[in-house]
Each structure stands twice: as C-alpha cells, then as structure tokens.
Amino acid sequence: MKIYKSLSEIQSDLADNKISCVELVEWYINRIDEAKRLNAFLEVFNTSALEKAKEVDAKLKTNTAGKLAGMVIALKDNLCYKGHNVSASSKILEGFESLYNATVVERLLAEDAIIIGRCNCDEFAMGSSNENSAFGNVLNPLDESRVPGGSSGGAAAAVAANLCLASLGTDTGGSIRQPASFCGVVGLKPTYGRVSRYGAIAYASSFDQIGPITNNVADAALIMEVIAGNDEYDSTVSSKLVPEYSKQIDTKPAKLRIAYIKDIIESEGLNPEIKAHIYSVIEKLKSEGHTVEAVEFPYLDYLVPVYYVLTTAEASSNLARYDGIGFGYRSKNATDLESTYKKSRAEGFGTEVKRRIMLGTFVLSSGYYDAYYSKGQKVRRLLQNKTNEILNNYDFIILPTTPGTAFKFGEHSADPIEMYLEDIFTVQANITGIPAISLPLGKHSNGLPFGIQVLTKHFAEAQLFAFSEYLMANYSNLPPSPSP
Ligand code: GLN
Image 1 (cartoon, rainbow, N blue to C red):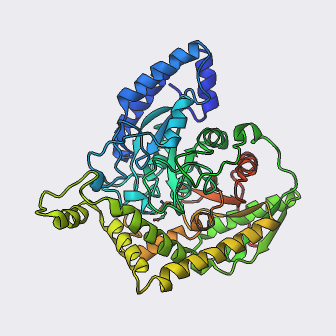
Image 2 (image 1 turned 180 degrees about the horizontal axis):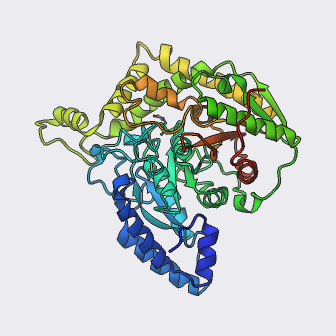
Image 3 (image 1 turned 120 degrees about the vertical axis):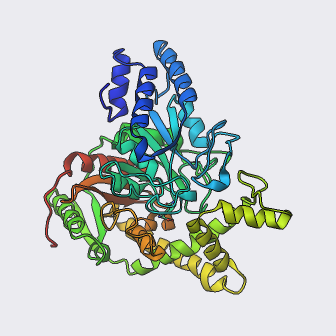
C-alpha cells in the first residue's frame, strides 16, 4: 500500500474502491509492529480499530460516513477512550481503564475517525524530550539517536513515521509544537477554551489544550472543525461558533501585518541556521508586500519562570488525586492509610513529576504564596497584556518553535533548568491563551527539520490556518538570509 500523507488522498482512494478502511487499518497495524523499536505506541487498539474500520466501510457503501472516514488517528496517552487503558505514561495509573470518552474522542468517533492506539509521552505531559516516560524513550524516526521532543513525543513520531495519519496531543507549554518541530510535522495548540479538555488527564488546567498533529494544514483544520466547540462538560470552553476551518484554508491572505520579536530572533541560544531561516521568511514576506516589523517584548526572561511557577502549582493540585486509593497503582508495602498515600505516590511517580509536585506545593505554601504564586499570576497578566497589545496591531507574530533541532538523548537531562529553557519560545502562547502553530518549514544542514511558529489572536484559528497553508505552499526550502 502506498504511504498516505493526507486524508483527501485516502478518501479519494476509498471512493474509487482502491482500498478499504479495514485494509488501511491492517496496514497501519503492521507498520506499527515493524517500527516497534521507535516505542511510539504504548498500545495498539487492534480490536476496536478493526471493528470501527468495518463499520466505516459499511457506511461508505451507503454514503452515510462522517467527515473523518478513513482518518486513522492516534491518541496521546493522556486522553480517555472508554474501555481502553490510559496511563499518562505513568506507573501510578497502572491498569487504569477509562470510564468514559474524552469529548474530543467522542467527536472524532462520531465523524468516523478510527482510533488506532495510544502514544507514549512524558509522564503526565511533563517534559520536552519524552525521556520522562515510565515506559522508555521514544526514538525520533528521522534520526534514532535523537529525541522526538516532548511531551507528545510518541504522537509526533507516529505521524512522522507514518504509523497513523494524524494524532491528538496536548500542549501545556509546547508539547504539541516542539515535538512537531523536531519530527518535521504540523502541530497546533488551539486558543485556550476552543477545545474541551473533558477527558484529558490534567497537568496544568489553565494552560492545557488538546490539538492535532498532522502532515499538513488541511488535516489539522478538519480535525479542529470536528473537535472544537462548546461542551457542557467543560465550563472553560467557549460557546463561540466553530467556523468550517477546512473550507477557508485556501483564502489567499490579503496584505498582512506581521510582527517579530527581535530579542527572540537575536537571542543567544537560537541556532544560527534557524535564525537565518526566520530572516529569510521575513524578507520574502516583505518582498510580497506584507508589512513585517520588529516589536518590543521586554519580558522574555520572565516567560519560562512564570510558566514553571504556575504550572507546577496547578500540577501539585491536579495530581493530588493519585493517592493509591482511587486510581491505578497502590503500594504493596503500605500498612495503613497514611503509608498507602506516601508509598503509592513515592513508588508510582517518576522523578520529574515528583520534582514538579514539590515545587508546586512550595510555591502554594502559606509562607511563599505571595512571593511566588501571586506574583506569578501578576506577571502572567503583564505578559498577556503585552502580547495582546502586539496582536491588536498585527495579524500574526512569527518566531522559531525551538532554539535548535532535535537533540541527542541525555543531552539536556542532567540539569532540569537546561531542559526547561527548551520551552522558551513555546510557553508564551500558553501563558496568554492564544493559538499557535508549528509548521515544518525549515531544514537544517544537519539533515533535521525545524519548525517556524506563528501566533495569532484568540479564536483566530481560521486566519491562522489560511496563513499557514500559504506559508507551507510558498515558503518551504527557502535559502537562508543574513540578518537585515
Ligand atoms: N516542556 C514543557 C514542560 O515540560 C511543556 C509540556 C507540555 O506542553 N505538556 O512542561
């Protein structure tokens, strides 16, 4: 079978009876098996995927199939799918089976997507390299000596290695966009409140969003159209109407106003080739008559600290429920209630998760609450105001997704702060709640891809998709340009 890179190709072959959904699913199951060494999947849902494939094949015959018919999609292992295990790649959820479908899963199934399995990730979505999974590293399919990024590392690797057509990840500080950048695929973090988080295992609730990882913009737009929108189970979801994103992606953008933050592009940690590439994108945009201007954002140094103060605070609260009683793992060494809590948590959580629970508990503790948590909230407001001010004057902000290309295993794991700094360009969108996409526009001389990131106003996904489609069509493989 040929390698499919878009849903439209699959749907056209289904319509011409060249393939069936059952054959397609069998083909993907086989590929996943052959690519086992990548460790991208924690579990393949053979039985339910094949059942669904049969159902969709029957519906196709009667012209009653949904818009995602033929889409074979994987879930990051922190999204609940009724009757299937889910673990957030943590030992503490050992053996836990979802009791209900996440809203996104319910909506995918209703449009006849086929869910093929659950993908490895950093434990509780905490990490930038997938090295924090309790179930081992995921290899980057483009260079197996390197990380796929994180925390949705398995979900991005699976799409890049054609083990599924698309996947859903979650993004709290970059976990969709950074692995998308490292694996050469498209990753979108939607506006906070665009997609229901019901049934997503929470890390930091005021930052978390679910979004698609795909080979192209059209598939991302279509998935968003299906999963976004009001949900009575999540009060933070907006009731704003969901546009038909997929029908609007071909709108050629008018003359745009685009901002870039000079301090980001000139920042010391940014790989010089990525910098040169961003400048070449900027120059080309200008040459096509768009306004592209440098803007001030004097708060770069605050992004990562604010992110880690606030997300760890939220995590310490969200993860309090894993107490050895209600879910998954319970220590066999416990003798009473208190030791059940203590030992189950001590044995069930990994090092990074424990570090964050402790840090979060500290920033929320009575003596330090004002110094850290309250202060963090105030700085978050400041960062939001400044970002919104820029976006009141410009349609988009353009920046790199990551400071470099995929790094080697172990390269940043000795020092947590060093790893946290990997998130420098992605956390702004989560701190402020705006949508952001990573597009695989760059190719480094080391052979690895890197993403260009575009940010825009709250709920402006339709414009973001149209601009992204335009960039993907016209801005791939640009020669590097020196700083202007
Ligand atoms: N790398 C970031 C972190 O470790 C982002 C994680 C995420 O978006 N889930 O927290």
